[in-house]
Length: 514
Image (tube, rainbow, N blue to C red; front, top):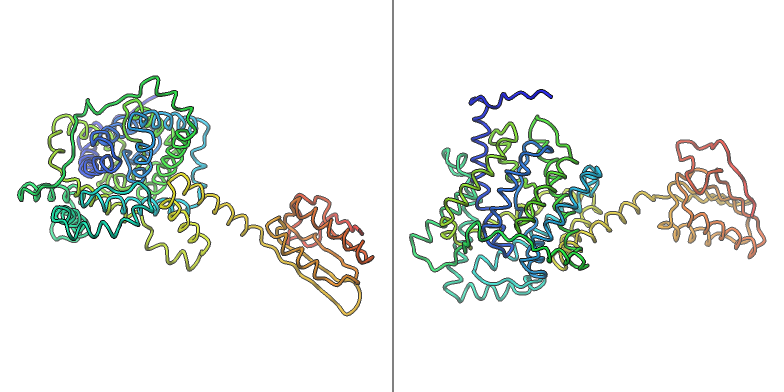
């Protein structure tokens, strides 16, 4: 196989090098912030970002997509660490990575695109809500309640603490100022907003302000890059026999895979380069998470914020995402003390802003106007995630989406022609499934018992076994009760597929008098 290396020319390297620096500057505060919000050492977020660049970055799949720790998994990681301990995190991430490899090898990557967009938006909205609620407490340097309902019911107490505690008020103002700068940064005049990413600028400004004023605000706790690496012990793998832990592994796998592949689809729309191979991308994510698990780090997923920054900065090849991993490694190894100066309230403000961006506010009203059922699925998924947890909320959303689709696709029309004399003609069109059975039987049972009935099912697109059995049973009952014959007109292939409305005259129709 012949390989060309035109990218070695400096003129072609420059766009990728420049883009890698931009992505690095965006990634640093987000990697640290996601780790702190997840309740793990800050270095673990940087390790996941490094693996996302140096490992997943060189693998085939999506050439411009950037991987690392994601705000979307913060809630799930925090729940997993609280339930199983930090030592189990590596086992969970390792098992999730192996499962992603299996799914990618089985060519299941493209099937993740079949997930209802309403469920995905509801998942992101639920994550955003939990992230905002949890980080609101962190902005005041207070401990958030563990449950979503607890976070909501604790808001009055949080407000009281902020108002009556000088320390909490000052800390909260730092977080609030961070959010304000994030919102206004791109609107500032001059080239600076286009050169310096907003998350890094806001964290740097907050850090400088806190240091200059000598404010007594909690800062990031640094353990050291090597010290933070906690490979799972061989004995810890036996914990995979725990049903609750396996459920967490499944949740990690499905959510991380879906987020990565949806991100890949979004990135493909941003550039004209090679399209994503979803199965290879899923395997790349699996390799990355396997390595992250072996290092005891956070789970890795493709992240749309860093990926969009990569594309918008002019990246042309995967070199940019690999180099961003190199810069993260150098930063974590050479400048660990820089992390100790970062106020946690500033990182909490960055994550509150990130959580707000996960909320599909602009899409909700048009969705409610045009596709009300989809809007209900979105809202229920988001609320369920807040009330229960990530896995149960997404599962409920998927079940609702399937039920909604089944209901909508089983559209059915019952036409009754009742003349002055002669038999009553009942023609049923559409899809006769068990979901519509009550309506069909209500209509038939309301017919006069002293008249013969002709039941025409020949134009049904589908007749399931439940409906076929119930209609046959009704016909037998009608005959016994009223001594009037019922003629049922059906295609030969019922209860499989009928001829449909496009072919009103089936080739083979039987008349059954019951």
